[in-house]
Length: 139
Image (tube, rainbow, N blue to C red; front, side, top):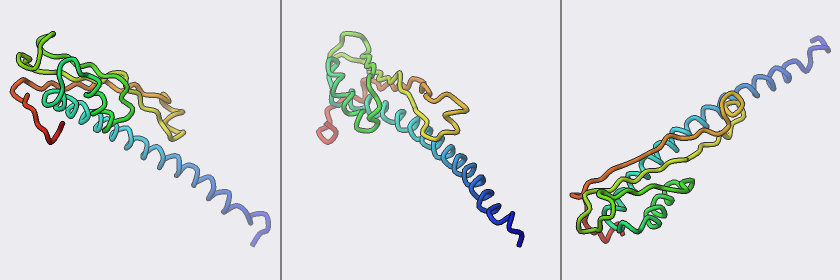
């Protein structure tokens, strides 16, 4: 064996390993992005359900706390009761929306090629009045 080529295999392995790990971390980060998208969508549905079943129109902090149990990154929500200014006896429905949620890449490759922070789209769910009833198992 030629003494000049002794470390060539180690150098090639290290270069291929770096590319492989960057690719693997990119795939894992993309999966994390899709998971965050899905969980946030489900959190808006659960927040609307919580608003309909347990909360009053003036009680958006409890709805936010219930949603943050699923997605801690949610900082603010918009709760719109239909019609505006209603109470639990005459509301027709509720819309819960999450806006301004940001996703940060962990892997270096997607963060370098794309934006390091992605602004997620708004998520919103509407539930009608017919769903409104008190449920002690949820509240």
